Each structure stands twice: as structure tokens, then as C-alpha cells.
Length: 337
Image (tube, rainbow, N blue to C red; front, side, top):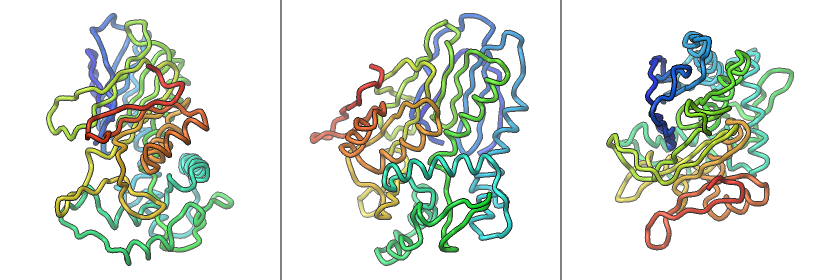
């Protein structure tokens, strides 16, 4: 995840936690950069932008969050995705829903289902992080759910969602925040903003330079289950004109009979992941892609993620537990040192 700290403050409170990355800010260099901070989509957001003409984007940014929520929020019973999950009929899809769906399907096919937006029923069955007292599902339940999950069981035809099985339910949580970042960045681009950082729930995208006239500095959290305000860093990088998304398994989990169950559910076998990969950070041109692949790589595990990312020339940074239980790191070529 990403938590953000800087000296500029122009707070903006919104709506919906979990962040693996830290925006490392130093003292404010001038007065031409503004900051919007708040809560939305179940997490926090932090936006820093150069505002020579002192524009106030708070209302517009608020509207963008609400727009995405009405399309993809599982917390909103009247959102498009919630209504589709209830099998309401004759619901035309909006452009944002289609964009996220198509990008998710692209990554699903490329990773052989490591990312899958039909994972909703599996997430509900495990209830990781939401109801720690709920019993764990048994094998029979998981097998029965796997019958109607899979990215090949849903498609878009003539602007409408088509399910092969009415029990299919969608969950865009693994990719929607990355898309939200991209949407806000497009808005800032259209307003002629040359320098900015946009972060939502740990997914971040940058353009231009910071208020110190340097590349934006991003810190990646050490994978510790830390409930205090302390945020020890594992490493930091300079992010230039790129997006960074991080997924991890070490903060959200369920523990039963001394065993931890990760909130990262594998769409392939229906069970929480069980491997030594603690977090993976992905760099891509857009945050939607980075966000989707970060989840897919967490499902794959260390060796498969490294092999896939190396073959497809994707820059990733992995933190894992070695044989002695100590934190160790591996990166693919192209990830900043």
C-alpha cells in the first residue's frame, strides 16, 4: 500500500484501507502545488498537483469518485455492478464499467485466470477481513462455487453483460482503484496540469516533477502487520511518468486454529494463497494495468510471477519470506533501484 505524507494540506473528505506505498515528501519548496486528501472507495486518497492558476478541483474529484462508485461499488446496493449481480435485466453498461471489464478480461486471459472478476462468490465464501467469526468453507462448498466462476463465463455483447450462469457475480475490487487513478489523471491532463501525483488506496501514478523539481519519490512498505502509525519502509524509488500498484497478503487475513488465511483468493483453485510472496509492486504506463497485474502476481506466487514478468518485460518488485523467515527481495529488469 501507499500512505502519503507531505507538507501541503488542502483536505478533501469523501467516502469508502490498506496501502503499501508511501509518498516521500520533503519540505515544501514553493506555493504552486496543492494537495487533496480524503477517504473514498473504502480507502484513502492523496492528490498533489501544480496549480499555478490556483484551481480548486475538489468538487470535480468528488464527482469522479461518485461516478465510479455508482458503476462498480459493491458497497452501494444500487450501483450497476450490484444490480447486475442480482441479475436485474435490461441494464446498459456505462463506459467505465466496460473499460474495467475489458482490461480485466485481457489480463485474465494473459495470466490464465490469475486475475478473475468473477471471484465474488469465492470472496464471500471466505469472508476474509469482514467476519472473522464466520466458519471457513469446506471443500464441497468451494468445488460447487468453482463450477460457475471463471472469466470465460461472462462477456459483453451489444453493450450488455451476458452470463453463462446466473450465479456468476462480479467483483472489480482488484482493478477498480487503479482505473480510478487513471480517470483522475485524465481529468488533470485535460485541465493542462503538467505535474501531479495521484494515489488511491496505495495505487499511484505520476506525471512531471514534484514541488522540489525532482521525480516523485515513492516508498514501499515493509511487509509487517503493523497496527500503529509507524510505516517502516522496505525500499523507495523515483517514479517518473509511470504508475505503481502494490498488492500484499500480510495485513488482511483470517486466523483459525493457529493458521492464517490470506485475503488473496486464487480464482484457479478457490482457496487463499499459500506461498512465501508477501507483496509485489508493479510498474506500468497506466495504473489499471499495474493494479490488475499486481493481484495476478500475488495469486501466482514468487517463482511464477518472476518468470511471467521477466518473459513479458513487466517491471516488478517482490518482497518474500526466505527459508529463515527473513524478508528478501527480487526484481525483474526495468524496476528502478
